[in-house]
Each structure stands twice: as structure tokens, then as C-alpha cells.
Length: 343
Ligand code: ISE
Image 1 (cartoon, rainbow, N blue to C red):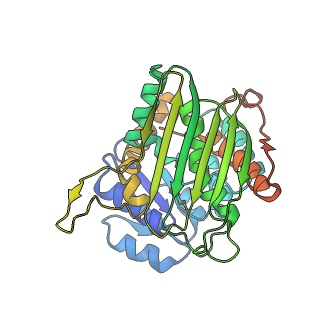
Image 2: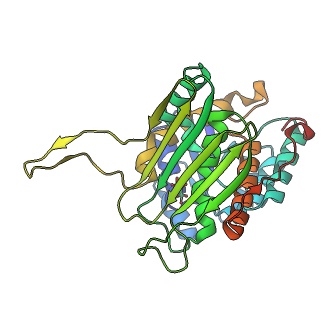
Image 3: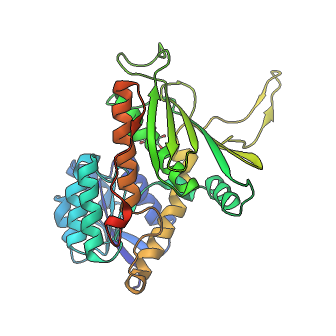
């Protein structure tokens, strides 16, 4: 395949970023179609890219014969239908999380893809492409820490959109730590509890922020996560892995450290996830483009997390939302992977 012709569906902040990424930084692909539920937005972006056009209906964009592959940056509730359309038309797709918004439809997507006998869906868990996470994973797999035992995570955002409620902290923010845990440890999570400490007075009314998630993996490893999404300060994502033979820490944001005339010292605050994970998104997209271009020979059009990873994350987050309500540990309800050949 020569240059991959991509349709980007949803050109809000993330989708528009992906259009720019594919156009300016990724080789082997170009954006030929854009779509958004606000048509003017898509038209404006299309007009700025040679050879690109806006298409009003997302399903038409997927079916378009001039489109080889699709990027979904549309709202989560629309993913279900759009992913099934991609499968129906045999179009490889990079889908921003969540895979779908509930466990049942995620499982349905996994099954439908498995029936096709090829992997067309990659889920946008971009942290797997972040250099620090990749380094940590490589050390872990090389046995540098001996048996890994505990993972401590911090996930802080300066602010979140007004639409955020307590369960979104689980489904939209914690979901990344769920994927990081599964990625680093290569095993499923079997229970989750959410503790509710005193609420930040600066958080919008009714939102339980911060939250502390405590998860346990199938082999009994402990994971704790501080989620605090209204700090008003900076974007901070840190992970510490503790093993039998030592520990490692990532996410310190240690760029340039400056000593100031005012008698202070410090560096620059990372304002958001696009700055923190910008490079990871680039690597993620380049891997995806290469995987799709070689997919016809391998039968695998994914260069990273699969539909199964999206389903597993949905299952853990659904248990997390229940745990948020009950305050008790909740067992994760998942089908066995072996029950779906090809998943
Ligand atoms: C957002 O959707 C993301 O995916 C960010 O990575 C995460 O830090 C943030 O909490 C989410 O709202």
C-alpha cells in the first residue's frame, strides 16, 4: 500500500490534533476526509489541507471508497455504531478511548472483530507509547526488578471540563491507570475499590475529588492510584513500580531546572495531557500507520492496544463506578479471553 488515506471523525481538540499530527509529523499517511457533528468545524479543517474534504455523515465517511483507515475521536457514545461500521467495511481503525461506553457493547465489538479473523481495531491508550512507560516496561520484562509487587500511581489534572462528574474520574481518567497496570503487569485486574477522602473545596459541587482507587491483579499485585482532577496547578502523571529487587519512578517532568534571581528554583509546569503525551501520540500514530500498511500480510492492523484491551478497561471501570457508589471492593466481571477465539 502506498500512502494510507485516513478519515478523521470528530475534530474537537483531540481530533484536530490528530489531523495536524497525521499531516505534519507522521509519514506514510494523509488525511483525505474529516467529519464532525458541527459540519462547519470539519469544513474549516478540510479547507486547510490539500486533497481533504468534509463529509457530513460519519458512516458515509467510513464507507467512502477513498478511505483506507479511520481515526475515531468522536464522543464515546457514538463509538459502538462507528466501530461496527468499520468492521463491516473492513476498515482499520484507531479509536480514542473508551472503546465503547459500556461493557456489553465493548464485548460485542470484541466478538464481531474476532469473527472476522483479523485485528482491525486499535484503542488509543497512548501511554504505552510514552518513552518513560516503554522504558519501565522493558526493565520489568528484562527481570530487573525481580518479581513486581506494587504499583503506586498519581493522576492529577489542573482542571476538567464542566461535564465531568465523579464517575467520569473513573471512566475517563482512571481508565489510563487501568491500562497501564494491564500493560506493565501483563495480567488482568480482578478487583477494585474506591476510597473517598475529604473533598477538595475547589472542586465543583457534588464531585468526589480526590478519589483513591485500590486495585488487585489476578496474581495478587497491589495497585493504588491517587486521582485528583481539580488541583488548579498542573498536569501530573507519575508511576512508581516496586519489585522484589528494587523500584523505579517515572513522570517527574524533569525538564530544564532553573535557579532564579528571586531566590527560587524550578522548571516549567506541564499544563495538560497534550503537552505531557504529545510525543507518545506521535509514536502511537506512526506505529498504527505502519501496522495498517502491513496489515494485509499480517492480518493484524493494530500496532498497539487492541479491542480486548478496550473491553478489559471498560470492565474494570464499570466495577470502579460500582465501587464508587458502595465504597466496597467490587470484583471485575469479565469473560475469559479464551472463550472468544481470535480475541
Ligand atoms: C482525558 O480524557 C485524558 O485522556 C487524559 O489523559 C486524562 O489525564 C484526563 O483525566 C482525561 O480527562
